[in-house]
Length: 369
Image 1 (spheres, rainbow, N blue to C red):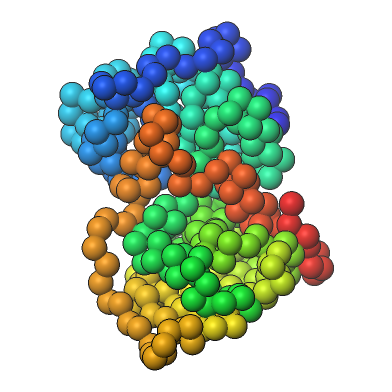
Image 2 (image 1 turned 45 degrees about the vertical axis):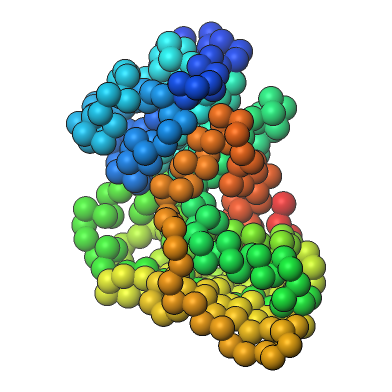
Protein backbone atom coordinates (compact mmCIF):
# COMPACT_ATOMS: atom_id res chain seq x y z
CA UNK A 1 0.00 0.00 0.00
CA UNK A 2 1.31 3.44 -0.84
CA UNK A 3 1.73 5.52 2.33
CA UNK A 4 3.38 8.74 1.17
CA UNK A 5 0.19 10.77 1.76
CA UNK A 6 -0.82 8.92 4.94
CA UNK A 7 -0.32 11.65 7.53
CA UNK A 8 -1.42 14.38 5.13
CA UNK A 9 -4.80 12.73 4.61
CA UNK A 10 -5.34 11.40 8.13
CA UNK A 11 -3.77 14.03 10.31
CA UNK A 12 -0.84 14.13 12.67
CA UNK A 13 -0.54 11.31 15.16
CA UNK A 14 -1.91 8.65 12.85
CA UNK A 15 0.98 6.32 13.63
CA UNK A 16 0.21 6.40 17.35
CA UNK A 17 -3.34 5.10 17.35
CA UNK A 18 -4.31 2.46 19.92
CA UNK A 19 -4.23 -1.17 18.89
CA UNK A 20 -7.87 -1.96 19.68
CA UNK A 21 -11.14 -0.08 19.52
CA UNK A 22 -13.24 0.73 22.57
CA UNK A 23 -16.98 1.37 22.66
CA UNK A 24 -17.73 -2.36 22.61
CA UNK A 25 -21.36 -3.36 22.03
CA UNK A 26 -23.73 -3.51 24.93
CA UNK A 27 -27.27 -2.54 25.73
CA UNK A 28 -26.43 1.05 24.89
CA UNK A 29 -25.21 0.15 21.40
CA UNK A 30 -21.89 0.86 19.71
CA UNK A 31 -20.03 3.93 18.55
CA UNK A 32 -19.76 4.51 14.81
CA UNK A 33 -17.37 6.93 13.14
CA UNK A 34 -18.24 8.40 9.74
CA UNK A 35 -15.15 9.40 7.77
CA UNK A 36 -15.90 11.55 4.74
CA UNK A 37 -15.34 14.91 3.04
CA UNK A 38 -17.04 17.27 0.61
CA UNK A 39 -18.38 15.12 -2.22
CA UNK A 40 -18.67 11.95 -0.15
CA UNK A 41 -21.20 9.59 -1.74
CA UNK A 42 -24.58 8.49 -0.37
CA UNK A 43 -24.18 10.36 2.89
CA UNK A 44 -27.88 11.21 3.15
CA UNK A 45 -28.72 7.50 3.05
CA UNK A 46 -25.92 6.61 5.45
CA UNK A 47 -26.86 9.23 8.04
CA UNK A 48 -30.51 8.20 7.86
CA UNK A 49 -29.63 4.52 8.28
CA UNK A 50 -27.40 5.20 11.29
CA UNK A 51 -30.16 7.29 12.84
CA UNK A 52 -32.58 4.37 12.47
CA UNK A 53 -30.16 1.69 13.73
CA UNK A 54 -30.97 0.68 17.30
CA UNK A 55 -27.48 -0.77 17.71
CA UNK A 56 -25.88 2.66 17.14
CA UNK A 57 -25.43 4.61 20.38
CA UNK A 58 -23.43 7.53 19.01
CA UNK A 59 -21.97 8.75 15.74
CA UNK A 60 -18.85 10.89 15.37
CA UNK A 61 -17.97 12.60 12.10
CA UNK A 62 -14.68 13.39 10.39
CA UNK A 63 -15.42 16.03 7.76
CA UNK A 64 -12.63 18.44 6.77
CA UNK A 65 -14.24 21.77 5.97
CA UNK A 66 -17.48 20.75 7.65
CA UNK A 67 -19.67 20.75 4.54
CA UNK A 68 -21.66 17.72 5.73
CA UNK A 69 -22.07 18.72 9.38
CA UNK A 70 -25.49 20.36 9.07
CA UNK A 71 -26.91 17.39 7.18
CA UNK A 72 -25.47 15.02 9.77
CA UNK A 73 -26.99 16.99 12.63
CA UNK A 74 -30.37 17.12 10.94
CA UNK A 75 -30.42 13.38 10.30
CA UNK A 76 -28.75 12.11 13.46
CA UNK A 77 -29.95 14.57 16.06
CA UNK A 78 -28.51 13.79 19.49
CA UNK A 79 -26.74 10.71 18.11
CA UNK A 80 -24.11 13.00 16.56
CA UNK A 81 -21.65 13.20 19.43
CA UNK A 82 -18.58 14.91 17.97
CA UNK A 83 -17.16 16.43 14.78
CA UNK A 84 -13.49 16.34 13.72
CA UNK A 85 -11.32 17.63 10.92
CA UNK A 86 -9.14 14.51 10.74
CA UNK A 87 -9.92 10.77 10.70
CA UNK A 88 -6.98 9.99 12.97
CA UNK A 89 -8.24 12.29 15.70
CA UNK A 90 -11.74 10.81 15.52
CA UNK A 91 -10.41 7.26 15.77
CA UNK A 92 -8.02 8.08 18.60
CA UNK A 93 -10.49 10.04 20.74
CA UNK A 94 -13.77 8.21 20.02
CA UNK A 95 -12.46 4.68 19.39
CA UNK A 96 -15.54 3.57 17.42
CA UNK A 97 -16.37 -0.08 16.91
CA UNK A 98 -17.24 0.56 13.24
CA UNK A 99 -16.00 3.17 10.80
CA UNK A 100 -18.16 4.09 7.81
CA UNK A 101 -15.78 5.46 5.17
CA UNK A 102 -17.29 7.39 2.25
CA UNK A 103 -14.45 9.08 0.41
CA UNK A 104 -13.20 9.48 -3.12
CA UNK A 105 -11.46 6.29 -4.12
CA UNK A 106 -7.91 7.69 -4.19
CA UNK A 107 -8.22 8.98 -0.61
CA UNK A 108 -10.01 6.03 0.96
CA UNK A 109 -7.22 3.44 1.54
CA UNK A 110 -5.26 5.35 4.22
CA UNK A 111 -8.46 6.21 6.08
CA UNK A 112 -9.57 2.57 6.01
CA UNK A 113 -6.11 1.50 7.14
CA UNK A 114 -6.07 3.78 10.16
CA UNK A 115 -9.46 2.43 11.22
CA UNK A 116 -8.40 -1.19 10.81
CA UNK A 117 -5.16 -0.63 12.71
CA UNK A 118 -7.21 0.77 15.59
CA UNK A 119 -9.36 -2.36 15.68
CA UNK A 120 -12.42 -0.93 13.90
CA UNK A 121 -14.65 -2.88 11.61
CA UNK A 122 -15.14 -0.94 8.37
CA UNK A 123 -17.95 -0.39 5.92
CA UNK A 124 -16.49 1.39 2.89
CA UNK A 125 -18.11 3.13 -0.04
CA UNK A 126 -16.96 1.47 -3.24
CA UNK A 127 -14.57 1.36 -4.92
CA UNK A 128 -12.36 2.39 -1.93
CA UNK A 129 -9.18 2.31 -4.04
CA UNK A 130 -7.79 3.15 -7.48
CA UNK A 131 -5.34 0.23 -7.51
CA UNK A 132 -6.21 -3.32 -6.56
CA UNK A 133 -2.87 -3.61 -4.73
CA UNK A 134 -4.05 -1.02 -2.22
CA UNK A 135 -7.19 -2.97 -1.38
CA UNK A 136 -5.28 -6.24 -1.17
CA UNK A 137 -3.19 -4.68 1.58
CA UNK A 138 -6.35 -3.67 3.44
CA UNK A 139 -7.75 -7.15 2.93
CA UNK A 140 -4.67 -8.69 4.51
CA UNK A 141 -4.83 -6.26 7.44
CA UNK A 142 -8.51 -6.99 8.11
CA UNK A 143 -7.99 -10.76 7.89
CA UNK A 144 -4.98 -10.65 10.19
CA UNK A 145 -6.98 -8.80 12.85
CA UNK A 146 -10.28 -10.69 12.40
CA UNK A 147 -12.11 -7.53 11.31
CA UNK A 148 -14.94 -6.98 8.87
CA UNK A 149 -14.18 -4.92 5.77
CA UNK A 150 -17.49 -4.56 3.96
CA UNK A 151 -17.68 -2.84 0.58
CA UNK A 152 -21.00 -1.00 0.10
CA UNK A 153 -22.60 -3.48 -2.30
CA UNK A 154 -26.04 -2.94 -0.85
CA UNK A 155 -28.13 -4.75 -3.49
CA UNK A 156 -27.24 -8.06 -1.84
CA UNK A 157 -29.93 -7.40 0.77
CA UNK A 158 -32.73 -6.43 -1.59
CA UNK A 159 -35.69 -8.75 -0.98
CA UNK A 160 -35.94 -9.94 -4.59
CA UNK A 161 -32.26 -10.90 -4.47
CA UNK A 162 -32.80 -12.84 -1.26
CA UNK A 163 -35.69 -14.77 -2.79
CA UNK A 164 -33.73 -15.50 -5.98
CA UNK A 165 -30.77 -16.74 -3.95
CA UNK A 166 -33.07 -18.98 -1.91
CA UNK A 167 -34.51 -20.54 -5.07
CA UNK A 168 -31.07 -21.18 -6.54
CA UNK A 169 -29.74 -22.47 -3.22
CA UNK A 170 -32.61 -24.95 -2.97
CA UNK A 171 -31.72 -26.30 -6.41
CA UNK A 172 -34.80 -25.03 -8.22
CA UNK A 173 -32.69 -23.89 -11.19
CA UNK A 174 -30.47 -26.97 -11.10
CA UNK A 175 -26.91 -26.66 -12.28
CA UNK A 176 -26.20 -23.08 -13.41
CA UNK A 177 -25.39 -22.79 -17.12
CA UNK A 178 -25.34 -19.09 -17.94
CA UNK A 179 -25.80 -15.53 -16.73
CA UNK A 180 -26.79 -12.40 -18.63
CA UNK A 181 -26.75 -9.00 -16.92
CA UNK A 182 -26.93 -5.31 -17.63
CA UNK A 183 -26.97 -2.17 -15.52
CA UNK A 184 -27.60 1.03 -17.47
CA UNK A 185 -27.77 4.56 -16.06
CA UNK A 186 -28.22 8.00 -17.59
CA UNK A 187 -25.80 9.63 -20.03
CA UNK A 188 -27.27 13.01 -19.03
CA UNK A 189 -25.06 13.41 -15.97
CA UNK A 190 -21.98 13.08 -18.17
CA UNK A 191 -22.94 16.14 -20.22
CA UNK A 192 -22.68 18.52 -17.25
CA UNK A 193 -19.38 20.42 -16.89
CA UNK A 194 -19.70 20.20 -13.10
CA UNK A 195 -19.68 16.39 -13.34
CA UNK A 196 -16.47 16.45 -15.37
CA UNK A 197 -14.73 17.98 -12.33
CA UNK A 198 -15.84 15.34 -9.85
CA UNK A 199 -13.77 12.36 -8.76
CA UNK A 200 -16.22 10.02 -10.48
CA UNK A 201 -15.01 11.37 -13.85
CA UNK A 202 -11.25 11.09 -13.16
CA UNK A 203 -9.50 7.76 -13.35
CA UNK A 204 -6.68 8.85 -11.05
CA UNK A 205 -9.25 9.76 -8.39
CA UNK A 206 -12.00 7.19 -8.96
CA UNK A 207 -10.19 4.18 -10.40
CA UNK A 208 -12.53 3.96 -13.39
CA UNK A 209 -15.99 4.87 -14.61
CA UNK A 210 -19.35 3.15 -14.84
CA UNK A 211 -18.04 -0.37 -14.27
CA UNK A 212 -16.27 0.35 -10.98
CA UNK A 213 -18.94 2.73 -9.71
CA UNK A 214 -22.20 1.01 -10.78
CA UNK A 215 -21.48 -2.14 -12.75
CA UNK A 216 -19.64 -3.63 -9.78
CA UNK A 217 -23.01 -4.07 -8.05
CA UNK A 218 -24.25 -6.43 -10.75
CA UNK A 219 -20.93 -8.28 -11.04
CA UNK A 220 -21.15 -8.92 -7.32
CA UNK A 221 -24.77 -10.08 -7.59
CA UNK A 222 -23.84 -12.50 -10.35
CA UNK A 223 -21.45 -14.27 -7.99
CA UNK A 224 -23.69 -13.88 -4.92
CA UNK A 225 -26.70 -15.41 -6.64
CA UNK A 226 -24.90 -18.26 -8.39
CA UNK A 227 -22.64 -19.04 -5.44
CA UNK A 228 -19.71 -19.19 -7.83
CA UNK A 229 -16.90 -16.72 -8.33
CA UNK A 230 -15.89 -15.22 -11.67
CA UNK A 231 -12.51 -16.68 -12.58
CA UNK A 232 -11.80 -15.24 -16.05
CA UNK A 233 -12.96 -12.20 -18.02
CA UNK A 234 -12.61 -10.59 -21.42
CA UNK A 235 -14.17 -7.49 -22.88
CA UNK A 236 -14.13 -3.88 -24.00
CA UNK A 237 -14.46 -0.46 -22.41
CA UNK A 238 -14.50 3.09 -23.73
CA UNK A 239 -16.33 6.37 -24.11
CA UNK A 240 -19.20 5.88 -26.54
CA UNK A 241 -21.09 9.06 -25.64
CA UNK A 242 -18.39 11.49 -26.75
CA UNK A 243 -18.00 13.33 -23.45
CA UNK A 244 -14.56 14.63 -22.31
CA UNK A 245 -13.90 11.85 -19.79
CA UNK A 246 -10.85 9.77 -19.01
CA UNK A 247 -13.02 6.99 -17.53
CA UNK A 248 -15.31 4.64 -19.41
CA UNK A 249 -18.98 5.34 -19.90
CA UNK A 250 -19.46 1.84 -21.32
CA UNK A 251 -18.10 -1.67 -20.82
CA UNK A 252 -19.05 -5.03 -22.31
CA UNK A 253 -17.79 -8.07 -20.42
CA UNK A 254 -17.65 -11.83 -21.01
CA UNK A 255 -17.20 -13.96 -17.91
CA UNK A 256 -16.33 -17.52 -16.93
CA UNK A 257 -17.45 -18.77 -13.53
CA UNK A 258 -15.71 -21.27 -11.27
CA UNK A 259 -18.59 -23.74 -11.72
CA UNK A 260 -18.08 -23.74 -15.50
CA UNK A 261 -20.94 -21.38 -16.35
CA UNK A 262 -20.51 -18.48 -18.76
CA UNK A 263 -21.92 -14.97 -18.58
CA UNK A 264 -22.08 -11.58 -20.25
CA UNK A 265 -22.63 -8.09 -18.88
CA UNK A 266 -23.21 -4.62 -20.29
CA UNK A 267 -22.38 -1.70 -18.01
CA UNK A 268 -22.95 1.82 -19.28
CA UNK A 269 -24.37 5.34 -19.22
CA UNK A 270 -26.87 5.30 -22.11
CA UNK A 271 -30.23 6.71 -20.99
CA UNK A 272 -31.63 10.22 -20.75
CA UNK A 273 -32.76 9.47 -17.18
CA UNK A 274 -33.32 6.61 -14.75
CA UNK A 275 -31.97 3.07 -14.88
CA UNK A 276 -32.46 -0.17 -16.76
CA UNK A 277 -31.23 -3.36 -15.12
CA UNK A 278 -31.48 -7.11 -15.46
CA UNK A 279 -29.90 -10.28 -14.20
CA UNK A 280 -31.04 -13.50 -15.87
CA UNK A 281 -29.76 -16.91 -14.83
CA UNK A 282 -30.35 -20.16 -16.69
CA UNK A 283 -29.86 -23.62 -15.21
CA UNK A 284 -30.51 -27.26 -15.99
CA UNK A 285 -33.94 -27.15 -14.33
CA UNK A 286 -35.13 -23.63 -15.07
CA UNK A 287 -34.39 -19.93 -15.10
CA UNK A 288 -34.96 -16.75 -13.13
CA UNK A 289 -34.82 -13.05 -13.93
CA UNK A 290 -34.45 -9.97 -11.74
CA UNK A 291 -35.44 -6.57 -13.11
CA UNK A 292 -34.65 -4.15 -10.33
CA UNK A 293 -35.48 -1.07 -12.42
CA UNK A 294 -38.50 -1.13 -14.70
CA UNK A 295 -40.42 -4.36 -14.91
CA UNK A 296 -41.06 -7.29 -12.58
CA UNK A 297 -38.63 -7.51 -9.65
CA UNK A 298 -38.51 -11.30 -10.01
CA UNK A 299 -39.82 -13.95 -12.36
CA UNK A 300 -38.82 -17.62 -12.47
CA UNK A 301 -39.58 -21.05 -13.84
CA UNK A 302 -38.50 -24.47 -12.61
CA UNK A 303 -39.10 -27.96 -13.98
CA UNK A 304 -38.67 -29.26 -10.44
CA UNK A 305 -42.21 -28.15 -9.62
CA UNK A 306 -44.95 -30.74 -10.00
CA UNK A 307 -46.78 -28.43 -12.38
CA UNK A 308 -44.13 -26.07 -13.80
CA UNK A 309 -45.26 -22.54 -14.54
CA UNK A 310 -43.78 -19.06 -14.80
CA UNK A 311 -43.96 -17.21 -11.49
CA UNK A 312 -44.10 -13.42 -11.63
CA UNK A 313 -43.61 -11.49 -8.38
CA UNK A 314 -44.22 -7.78 -8.78
CA UNK A 315 -43.93 -6.68 -5.15
CA UNK A 316 -41.76 -7.60 -2.21
CA UNK A 317 -42.31 -6.50 1.38
CA UNK A 318 -39.54 -4.91 3.35
CA UNK A 319 -36.93 -2.23 2.72
CA UNK A 320 -34.15 -2.24 0.14
CA UNK A 321 -31.14 -0.12 -0.68
CA UNK A 322 -28.59 1.33 1.70
CA UNK A 323 -30.64 1.49 4.91
CA UNK A 324 -30.88 -2.28 5.52
CA UNK A 325 -27.30 -2.72 4.36
CA UNK A 326 -25.89 -0.16 6.80
CA UNK A 327 -27.97 -1.66 9.58
CA UNK A 328 -26.60 -5.11 8.74
CA UNK A 329 -23.03 -3.80 8.82
CA UNK A 330 -23.67 -2.21 12.21
CA UNK A 331 -25.15 -5.43 13.58
CA UNK A 332 -22.21 -7.42 12.25
CA UNK A 333 -19.80 -4.98 13.89
CA UNK A 334 -21.76 -5.32 17.13
CA UNK A 335 -21.34 -9.07 16.89
CA UNK A 336 -25.03 -9.96 16.65
CA UNK A 337 -25.16 -11.28 13.07
CA UNK A 338 -22.95 -12.28 10.16
CA UNK A 339 -21.77 -9.50 7.81
CA UNK A 340 -23.69 -8.96 4.55
CA UNK A 341 -20.44 -9.69 2.73
CA UNK A 342 -17.00 -10.77 3.84
CA UNK A 343 -13.66 -9.11 3.28
CA UNK A 344 -12.99 -11.88 0.73
CA UNK A 345 -16.21 -10.98 -1.10
CA UNK A 346 -15.20 -7.32 -1.15
CA UNK A 347 -11.78 -8.10 -2.57
CA UNK A 348 -13.20 -10.47 -5.18
CA UNK A 349 -15.61 -7.86 -6.51
CA UNK A 350 -12.80 -5.37 -6.99
CA UNK A 351 -10.43 -7.95 -8.45
CA UNK A 352 -13.09 -8.77 -11.04
CA UNK A 353 -13.47 -5.13 -12.06
CA UNK A 354 -9.74 -4.52 -12.35
CA UNK A 355 -9.34 -7.75 -14.33
CA UNK A 356 -12.03 -6.46 -16.72
CA UNK A 357 -10.08 -3.23 -17.16
CA UNK A 358 -6.87 -5.15 -17.81
CA UNK A 359 -8.62 -7.36 -20.35
CA UNK A 360 -10.02 -4.35 -22.21
CA UNK A 361 -6.67 -2.55 -22.23
CA UNK A 362 -4.62 -5.56 -23.37
CA UNK A 363 -7.13 -7.21 -25.67
CA UNK A 364 -6.52 -10.49 -23.84
CA UNK A 365 -8.66 -12.50 -21.43
CA UNK A 366 -7.55 -12.16 -17.81
CA UNK A 367 -7.71 -14.46 -14.83
CA UNK A 368 -9.36 -12.92 -11.78
CA UNK A 369 -7.31 -12.69 -8.59
